[in-house]
Length: 144
Image (cartoon, rainbow, N blue to C red; front, side, top):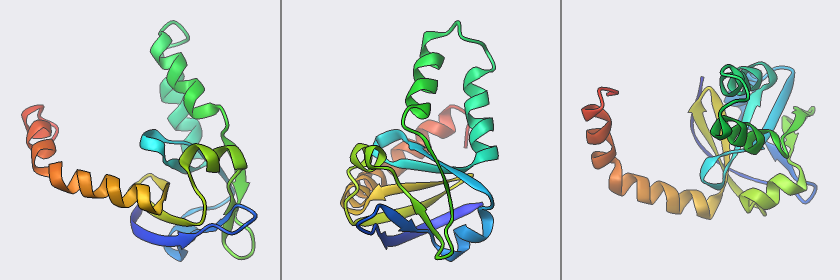
């Protein structure tokens, strides 16, 4: 499970060092894809297959599922940890997420999220301001 917030830098070649705690959990091929709110998702290839599978299980008849599958699949790339514990982030994904140098690497349960550091600070601040309302709404839905 991936937890925590870590500040890192992206090098000029688009390589990102993952936190040591996260590297220990990631083996084999990794998938880097577009995420929601302008971040990137990093999954193990097995978890990513399950993630896409949930969007495919009902077939191709639902246009919203097709749209979501295309969003997450287009531009997704495979990467492996190099000997320094870094992954490569493609130019198109760096542009999508607005990544330049300073990034926030966020543990979000079964996946890692990569955010532009300033965008993360703004998003996290807004979330902190609204979290009581959000948790109240989730409780009303029976989720919490």
